[in-house]
Length: 76
Image (tube, rainbow, N blue to C red; front, side, top):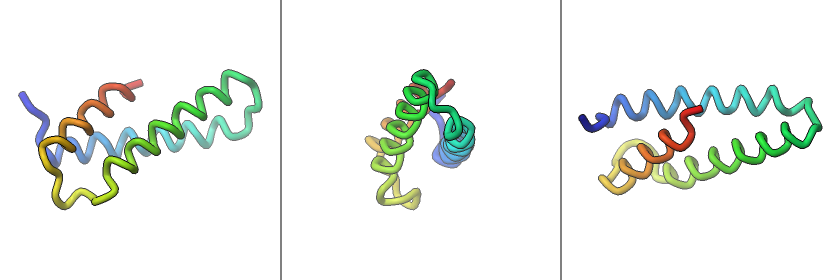
């Protein structure tokens, strides 16, 4: 079953919040693993921001599918 736009927005926003919180946790750790994780999170959040540059008001099917892909790639 396809993910509805409202459910997708809720799931994306929840994941974004989790990723930002994790980024905050990593800020105090200068180790290479933490740096790599922070870089990956920053890149994923940047990708999301780029995909949503026009906001949530009108999401074409192509963007909807990109967001589903983003959510799947960033599930953990």
